[in-house]
Amino acid sequence: MSTTPAPPKDRSTVRTLLRLWPYVRPVRARMCTAALVAVLASCIGLVIPLVLKWLVDGPVAERDPQGVWLGALYLLLLGLAEAGLFGLRRWLVARPLAGVEASMRAELYRHLQRVPIAFHDRWASGQLLSRGTTDLMLLRMFLAFPLTFLLVNGVTIIVGVIIMLLQDWVLGLVILGPAVPVVITCVVFERRYASVARRAQDQVGDLTTVVEESVLGIRIIKGFGRHRSQARAFRELSRTLRGTELHKARLLASIWAVIITLPELAIGAALVLGTVRVADGALSAGTLVAFLSTALALRWPVDSIGFLLAMSQEAATATERYFEVMDAERESGTVSVPAPVPAAARGNGARPGGGGARSGDDGLRFHAVRFRYPDAPEGSPPVLDRIDLHIRHGESMALVGATGTGKTTLTALVPRLHEVTSGRITLDGENITAMPREELRTKVAVAFEEPTLFSASVGENVLMGAGGDAGRAELDRALAVAQAGFAHTLPEGTDTQVGEQGLSLSGGQRQRLALARAVVGRPRFLVLDDPLSALDVHTEAAVETALRQVLADTTALIVAHRPSTVLLADRVALLSGGRIAAVGTHHELLRTNAEYAWLMSGADRTGTDGPATAPTDIPEEARR
Ligand SMILES: Nc1ncnc2c1ncn2[C@@H]1O[C@H](COP(=O)(O)OP(=O)(O)OP(=O)(O)O)[C@@H](O)[C@H]1O
Ligand SMILES: [Mg+2]
Image (cartoon, rainbow, N blue to C red; front, side, top):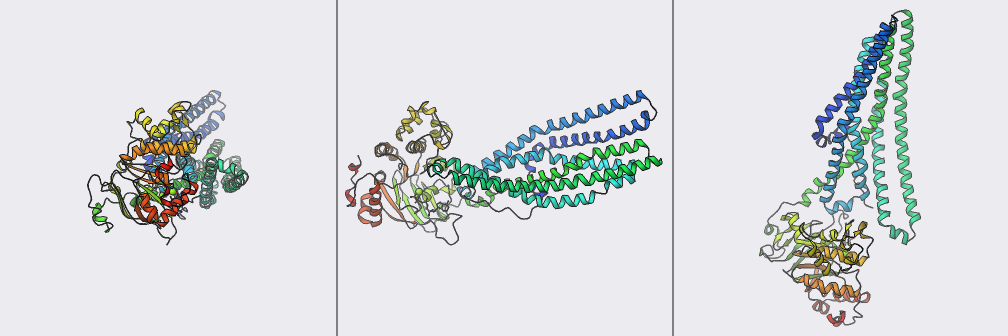
């Protein structure tokens, strides 16, 4: 399981949350209106105690029933206005905030499609998944509630305190007493809560990864009877997460205890003191009622500060986690889009005159290509070192090498799934790094060892390899080339939906569909990584016959393990020790290169061509 970068130690909640501004900017007018409406609603709530005061000191004291009814009507109207305004606030923010969440999610998805493969090698998929779901939901909730209500409640508390001080400043000071300890608690709490919240959100990511891996690897898990140990691993992770969540709950509980108890005590003290003063005649009963109602009206704004702060902390953590992914582009930007240096200027003398060959039909060339994985350990040798290879226009070249020598790595460099560490690769003389990616991807088609299909119809999966205008005819041709006629016999033909990863198809069927996808766009360059490995001998022979026609008018690089696949190609390159050790025809290499002969005979033992004691004994006819 890959890991994710450690979170930064120092961070300011406010500064982190400010990074959301570009996303909130488009809806700022509505957000501000909503906040104003909420402040207004909240202040209307504070007028109610003043009406009460008038009611107690006026009509009630004077025993005037008509006045009491009038007061009750005022109170009702104020209550209705408050409720209506809060409803309006909700209506104002709901739609724009759903939009903000959707656009952030879309941007994350777009970004994940663009970052180099090395990024995905490094990041666990569950971590990305949880950032795109849980974290974004936390952000939307933050924008909907804490952001507005920290402001609204702040204003309400200030206005309320001013009203109380104006009613009676002695009682006001009693109520204000707990402010200092409450603020200190909040500051301490915020810091502790931040670190626990981060831990919880990371653990959700880890848990997601385990779930995802066990769903995708369910066959292995069942096949090896690992469901118990897998379940144990899951249980342990979820127990850890539960522990962290409980830790969060404990922190929240202690802050609530402080935030609720202290103001409550202060209200009690004010009540006692106020009653004594009313009895002494120093204070009117109406003022005391108004004072206490105001204090009670402020209870919710004060109490809610605890969880509003908690939600803000979680939102800050979510923002941090979101931008950890979004910032990846900057880190790899220089790698993924190197400045388009003129091909000839970067030659390094790799091949004399190599960069100069700018004819339209130069084929595919590797010039002194060196590659090491960005996450490889320090000091380890590069996987590929000074690869020089020329596949002429229209030629097909087989790439042979022992397992783990870097064949897959080499093929991944052509469509720029990885960036060369040094050296360059040219298509018809043009450096691939100077080419817009769309152009590169239409010129080069690929099929990998692991044929990946998507949850879509068979036809859609294949046509993914072609431009938007490809239709039925192209689909049928590609299926024919890949010997994937079985697609027509599926229950709904090529409209049949294949499940996640195409798991409902056999390995050979998936491989043939992946091959059809590679050839459907009639690419100028074809890169196939061991495309026939899962096929039986007869299907393989049939695919080869069809593929031969395709190869006749493309330039192809085909990774091959079996002599039968090698024989599809015009020439063979042997990859060994990070270099191209030899290039020649199959028969030449069998005669002249011991390693090649050994590789091919090894392949033979497990392959289909019968024993090959004498290397030259693998005639083409033997395969038919
Ligand atoms: N994402 C990666 N990060 C670091 N090292 C990698 C990564 N992928 C592959 N490697 C290493 O690079 C080397 C070459 O791997 P590669 O997959 O290119 O071999 P291969 O020739 O295709 O092997 P096979 O014939 O088994 O398919 C291996 O030693 C492998 O461990
Ligand atoms: Mg490979």
